[in-house]
Length: 313
Image 1 (cartoon, rainbow, N blue to C red):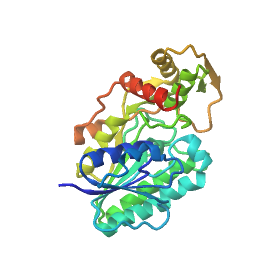
Image 2 (cartoon, rainbow, N blue to C red):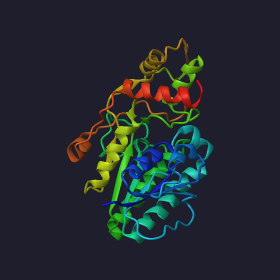
Image 3 (cartoon, one colour):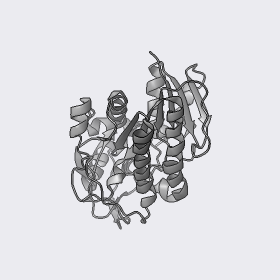
Image 4 (cartoon, helix red, strand yellow):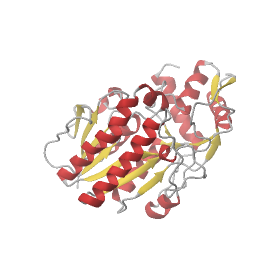
Protein backbone atom coordinates (compact mmCIF):
# COMPACT_ATOMS: atom_id res chain seq x y z
CA UNK A 1 0.00 0.00 0.00
CA UNK A 2 1.35 3.44 -0.91
CA UNK A 3 2.50 5.79 1.85
CA UNK A 4 2.43 9.55 2.36
CA UNK A 5 5.99 10.70 2.98
CA UNK A 6 7.40 14.09 3.96
CA UNK A 7 11.10 14.58 3.16
CA UNK A 8 12.86 17.71 4.38
CA UNK A 9 15.94 18.72 2.43
CA UNK A 10 14.16 17.10 -0.50
CA UNK A 11 16.06 19.10 -3.15
CA UNK A 12 19.44 18.22 -1.67
CA UNK A 13 21.90 15.53 -2.73
CA UNK A 14 20.67 12.66 -0.54
CA UNK A 15 17.13 13.99 -0.10
CA UNK A 16 16.45 14.16 -3.83
CA UNK A 17 17.54 10.54 -4.36
CA UNK A 18 15.14 9.50 -1.60
CA UNK A 19 12.37 11.54 -3.23
CA UNK A 20 13.06 9.71 -6.50
CA UNK A 21 12.92 6.34 -4.79
CA UNK A 22 9.57 6.89 -3.08
CA UNK A 23 7.92 8.68 -6.04
CA UNK A 24 8.96 5.79 -8.30
CA UNK A 25 7.62 3.42 -5.66
CA UNK A 26 4.18 5.00 -6.08
CA UNK A 27 4.14 6.80 -2.73
CA UNK A 28 2.83 10.34 -2.25
CA UNK A 29 5.87 12.53 -1.54
CA UNK A 30 6.01 16.05 -0.12
CA UNK A 31 9.52 17.48 -0.55
CA UNK A 32 10.39 20.49 1.62
CA UNK A 33 13.52 22.60 1.08
CA UNK A 34 14.67 26.15 1.81
CA UNK A 35 17.09 25.89 -1.17
CA UNK A 36 19.99 27.33 0.84
CA UNK A 37 22.10 24.40 -0.34
CA UNK A 38 19.45 22.36 -2.21
CA UNK A 39 18.88 22.67 -5.96
CA UNK A 40 15.58 22.44 -7.82
CA UNK A 41 17.41 20.83 -10.76
CA UNK A 42 17.67 17.69 -8.61
CA UNK A 43 13.88 17.25 -8.56
CA UNK A 44 12.53 19.23 -11.53
CA UNK A 45 12.05 16.01 -13.51
CA UNK A 46 9.32 15.13 -10.98
CA UNK A 47 7.28 18.32 -11.41
CA UNK A 48 3.89 17.50 -12.86
CA UNK A 49 3.71 14.03 -11.32
CA UNK A 50 0.48 13.52 -9.37
CA UNK A 51 2.26 11.91 -6.41
CA UNK A 52 4.84 14.66 -5.90
CA UNK A 53 4.53 18.11 -4.30
CA UNK A 54 7.37 20.55 -3.59
CA UNK A 55 7.17 23.21 -0.88
CA UNK A 56 9.80 25.97 -0.80
CA UNK A 57 9.91 26.04 2.97
CA UNK A 58 12.26 26.68 5.88
CA UNK A 59 11.50 23.87 8.33
CA UNK A 60 12.63 25.96 11.29
CA UNK A 61 9.33 27.79 10.80
CA UNK A 62 5.82 26.40 11.18
CA UNK A 63 5.19 23.25 9.11
CA UNK A 64 1.73 22.31 7.91
CA UNK A 65 1.06 19.29 5.71
CA UNK A 66 -2.60 18.57 4.90
CA UNK A 67 -4.13 15.17 5.58
CA UNK A 68 -2.47 12.01 6.76
CA UNK A 69 1.29 11.42 6.85
CA UNK A 70 2.93 8.01 7.28
CA UNK A 71 6.64 8.92 7.35
CA UNK A 72 8.59 12.09 8.13
CA UNK A 73 12.23 11.96 6.99
CA UNK A 74 14.33 14.88 8.27
CA UNK A 75 17.29 15.45 5.94
CA UNK A 76 17.35 19.25 5.92
CA UNK A 77 20.76 20.64 6.88
CA UNK A 78 23.90 22.09 5.38
CA UNK A 79 26.15 19.03 5.35
CA UNK A 80 29.63 20.01 4.19
CA UNK A 81 32.24 22.09 6.05
CA UNK A 82 32.03 24.78 3.35
CA UNK A 83 28.28 25.08 3.92
CA UNK A 84 28.06 24.94 7.68
CA UNK A 85 30.97 27.36 8.08
CA UNK A 86 29.09 29.77 5.78
CA UNK A 87 25.72 29.12 7.47
CA UNK A 88 26.58 28.33 11.11
CA UNK A 89 23.39 29.74 12.65
CA UNK A 90 21.11 28.11 10.05
CA UNK A 91 22.90 24.80 10.66
CA UNK A 92 22.29 24.97 14.39
CA UNK A 93 18.68 26.05 13.88
CA UNK A 94 17.77 23.28 11.42
CA UNK A 95 19.32 20.67 13.72
CA UNK A 96 17.56 21.99 16.81
CA UNK A 97 14.40 23.90 15.84
CA UNK A 98 13.99 22.03 12.54
CA UNK A 99 14.14 18.69 14.30
CA UNK A 100 11.66 19.96 16.90
CA UNK A 101 9.23 21.02 14.15
CA UNK A 102 9.57 17.82 12.11
CA UNK A 103 9.39 15.34 14.98
CA UNK A 104 6.45 17.41 16.23
CA UNK A 105 4.78 16.91 12.84
CA UNK A 106 5.35 13.15 13.17
CA UNK A 107 3.81 13.23 16.66
CA UNK A 108 0.77 15.18 15.40
CA UNK A 109 0.21 12.82 12.45
CA UNK A 110 1.06 9.57 14.24
CA UNK A 111 3.80 9.11 11.64
CA UNK A 112 7.12 7.27 11.76
CA UNK A 113 10.03 9.72 12.07
CA UNK A 114 13.53 9.21 10.67
CA UNK A 115 16.39 11.53 11.61
CA UNK A 116 19.35 11.83 9.26
CA UNK A 117 22.26 12.17 11.67
CA UNK A 118 25.92 11.95 10.78
CA UNK A 119 29.25 10.31 11.50
CA UNK A 120 30.30 13.79 12.65
CA UNK A 121 28.67 13.02 16.01
CA UNK A 122 31.83 10.95 16.64
CA UNK A 123 33.99 14.06 16.14
CA UNK A 124 37.71 13.33 15.78
CA UNK A 125 37.34 9.73 16.99
CA UNK A 126 39.76 7.97 19.30
CA UNK A 127 38.51 4.54 18.17
CA UNK A 128 38.50 3.12 14.64
CA UNK A 129 36.17 1.91 13.21
CA UNK A 130 33.41 3.79 15.04
CA UNK A 131 30.56 1.69 16.50
CA UNK A 132 27.21 3.19 17.51
CA UNK A 133 28.17 2.69 21.16
CA UNK A 134 31.06 5.17 20.88
CA UNK A 135 30.13 8.53 22.41
CA UNK A 136 32.57 10.58 20.36
CA UNK A 137 35.35 13.11 20.77
CA UNK A 138 33.80 16.44 19.81
CA UNK A 139 34.92 20.04 20.30
CA UNK A 140 31.57 21.77 20.98
CA UNK A 141 32.96 25.31 20.47
CA UNK A 142 35.19 24.67 17.45
CA UNK A 143 34.18 25.78 13.94
CA UNK A 144 32.80 22.31 13.12
CA UNK A 145 30.85 22.24 16.39
CA UNK A 146 27.83 23.93 14.79
CA UNK A 147 27.20 20.78 12.72
CA UNK A 148 28.39 18.17 15.22
CA UNK A 149 26.36 19.58 18.09
CA UNK A 150 23.25 20.30 16.03
CA UNK A 151 23.11 16.61 15.10
CA UNK A 152 23.94 15.41 18.63
CA UNK A 153 21.10 17.59 19.96
CA UNK A 154 18.81 16.30 17.20
CA UNK A 155 19.52 12.71 18.25
CA UNK A 156 18.80 13.55 21.91
CA UNK A 157 15.55 15.29 20.97
CA UNK A 158 14.48 12.39 18.77
CA UNK A 159 15.06 9.90 21.58
CA UNK A 160 13.21 12.17 24.03
CA UNK A 161 10.16 12.23 21.74
CA UNK A 162 10.37 8.47 21.42
CA UNK A 163 10.64 7.85 25.17
CA UNK A 164 8.30 10.57 26.43
CA UNK A 165 5.70 10.84 23.66
CA UNK A 166 5.97 7.36 22.18
CA UNK A 167 6.83 8.64 18.68
CA UNK A 168 7.97 5.82 16.39
CA UNK A 169 11.49 7.06 15.62
CA UNK A 170 14.58 5.98 13.66
CA UNK A 171 18.09 7.47 13.66
CA UNK A 172 20.74 6.90 11.00
CA UNK A 173 24.34 8.07 11.20
CA UNK A 174 25.45 8.71 7.63
CA UNK A 175 29.12 8.33 6.74
CA UNK A 176 30.71 9.91 3.65
CA UNK A 177 28.34 9.39 0.74
CA UNK A 178 28.98 10.33 -2.88
CA UNK A 179 27.33 10.16 -6.29
CA UNK A 180 25.46 12.18 -8.92
CA UNK A 181 23.85 15.47 -7.76
CA UNK A 182 26.72 16.46 -5.51
CA UNK A 183 27.63 20.11 -6.06
CA UNK A 184 31.00 20.88 -7.64
CA UNK A 185 31.64 23.52 -4.95
CA UNK A 186 30.45 21.24 -2.15
CA UNK A 187 33.85 21.38 -0.46
CA UNK A 188 34.05 17.67 0.35
CA UNK A 189 36.79 15.44 -0.93
CA UNK A 190 34.91 13.63 -3.74
CA UNK A 191 33.59 16.72 -5.60
CA UNK A 192 36.78 18.66 -4.85
CA UNK A 193 39.08 16.03 -6.33
CA UNK A 194 36.85 15.23 -9.31
CA UNK A 195 36.39 18.91 -10.22
CA UNK A 196 40.10 19.69 -9.83
CA UNK A 197 41.13 16.59 -11.80
CA UNK A 198 38.74 17.27 -14.70
CA UNK A 199 39.87 20.91 -14.88
CA UNK A 200 43.54 19.90 -14.77
CA UNK A 201 44.01 21.87 -11.55
CA UNK A 202 46.19 20.67 -8.65
CA UNK A 203 44.43 18.21 -6.31
CA UNK A 204 44.37 19.85 -2.88
CA UNK A 205 45.12 17.64 0.11
CA UNK A 206 44.69 19.18 3.54
CA UNK A 207 47.29 17.86 5.98
CA UNK A 208 49.75 15.15 4.91
CA UNK A 209 47.11 12.94 3.26
CA UNK A 210 47.40 10.14 5.83
CA UNK A 211 43.95 10.85 7.30
CA UNK A 212 41.36 8.28 6.24
CA UNK A 213 37.81 8.35 4.91
CA UNK A 214 35.31 5.75 3.73
CA UNK A 215 33.00 6.31 0.77
CA UNK A 216 29.47 4.94 0.27
CA UNK A 217 27.68 5.26 -3.08
CA UNK A 218 24.30 6.99 -2.93
CA UNK A 219 22.28 3.97 -4.19
CA UNK A 220 23.63 1.84 -1.33
CA UNK A 221 22.75 4.52 1.20
CA UNK A 222 19.17 4.81 -0.09
CA UNK A 223 18.68 1.04 0.16
CA UNK A 224 19.99 1.15 3.75
CA UNK A 225 17.63 4.00 4.67
CA UNK A 226 14.64 2.08 3.33
CA UNK A 227 15.65 -0.95 5.39
CA UNK A 228 16.00 1.20 8.54
CA UNK A 229 12.49 2.58 8.01
CA UNK A 230 11.13 -0.95 7.93
CA UNK A 231 13.11 -2.20 10.94
CA UNK A 232 11.70 -2.04 14.46
CA UNK A 233 14.73 -0.37 16.04
CA UNK A 234 14.98 3.08 17.60
CA UNK A 235 18.64 3.59 18.50
CA UNK A 236 21.19 4.99 16.00
CA UNK A 237 22.41 2.82 13.12
CA UNK A 238 25.60 3.50 11.14
CA UNK A 239 25.20 3.54 7.36
CA UNK A 240 28.38 3.74 5.32
CA UNK A 241 31.06 1.78 3.52
CA UNK A 242 33.73 0.31 5.83
CA UNK A 243 36.38 0.29 3.08
CA UNK A 244 38.97 2.80 4.29
CA UNK A 245 41.24 4.94 2.11
CA UNK A 246 43.85 7.51 2.99
CA UNK A 247 43.19 10.84 1.31
CA UNK A 248 46.47 10.44 -0.62
CA UNK A 249 45.38 6.99 -1.89
CA UNK A 250 42.01 8.45 -2.86
CA UNK A 251 43.62 11.30 -4.80
CA UNK A 252 45.60 8.76 -6.83
CA UNK A 253 42.39 6.81 -7.61
CA UNK A 254 40.67 9.98 -8.87
CA UNK A 255 43.68 10.81 -11.05
CA UNK A 256 43.61 7.30 -12.49
CA UNK A 257 39.87 7.27 -13.24
CA UNK A 258 39.83 10.75 -14.79
CA UNK A 259 43.09 10.34 -16.70
CA UNK A 260 44.21 13.60 -15.14
CA UNK A 261 47.80 14.81 -15.01
CA UNK A 262 47.04 17.13 -12.10
CA UNK A 263 49.73 17.44 -9.47
CA UNK A 264 48.96 16.96 -5.78
CA UNK A 265 49.48 19.94 -3.46
CA UNK A 266 49.28 20.12 0.31
CA UNK A 267 47.64 22.73 2.54
CA UNK A 268 47.31 22.96 6.34
CA UNK A 269 44.74 20.67 7.99
CA UNK A 270 41.64 22.61 9.18
CA UNK A 271 40.90 22.73 12.90
CA UNK A 272 39.26 19.57 14.34
CA UNK A 273 39.39 17.75 10.99
CA UNK A 274 39.00 14.03 11.82
CA UNK A 275 42.11 11.86 11.37
CA UNK A 276 40.04 8.72 10.77
CA UNK A 277 36.49 8.06 9.64
CA UNK A 278 35.24 4.53 9.13
CA UNK A 279 31.90 2.98 10.11
CA UNK A 280 31.48 -0.20 12.07
CA UNK A 281 28.43 -1.61 10.24
CA UNK A 282 28.10 -4.80 12.29
CA UNK A 283 24.69 -3.66 13.56
CA UNK A 284 23.38 -2.82 10.05
CA UNK A 285 24.52 -6.21 8.76
CA UNK A 286 22.93 -8.09 11.66
CA UNK A 287 19.73 -6.08 12.03
CA UNK A 288 19.01 -5.08 8.43
CA UNK A 289 20.95 -7.59 6.36
CA UNK A 290 22.48 -4.53 4.70
CA UNK A 291 25.95 -3.73 3.47
CA UNK A 292 27.19 -1.66 0.53
CA UNK A 293 27.30 -3.45 -2.81
CA UNK A 294 28.77 -0.79 -5.12
CA UNK A 295 32.57 -0.83 -5.34
CA UNK A 296 34.20 2.56 -4.83
CA UNK A 297 35.72 2.74 -8.32
CA UNK A 298 32.41 1.66 -9.89
CA UNK A 299 30.54 4.46 -8.10
CA UNK A 300 33.26 6.99 -8.87
CA UNK A 301 33.07 6.27 -12.60
CA UNK A 302 29.34 7.12 -12.53
CA UNK A 303 29.99 10.23 -10.44
CA UNK A 304 32.80 11.45 -12.71
CA UNK A 305 30.54 11.03 -15.75
CA UNK A 306 27.85 13.10 -14.01
CA UNK A 307 30.38 15.86 -13.26
CA UNK A 308 31.61 15.88 -16.88
CA UNK A 309 28.07 16.37 -18.22
CA UNK A 310 26.55 18.56 -15.51
CA UNK A 311 29.43 21.02 -15.16
CA UNK A 312 30.87 20.74 -18.70
CA UNK A 313 34.22 19.57 -17.39
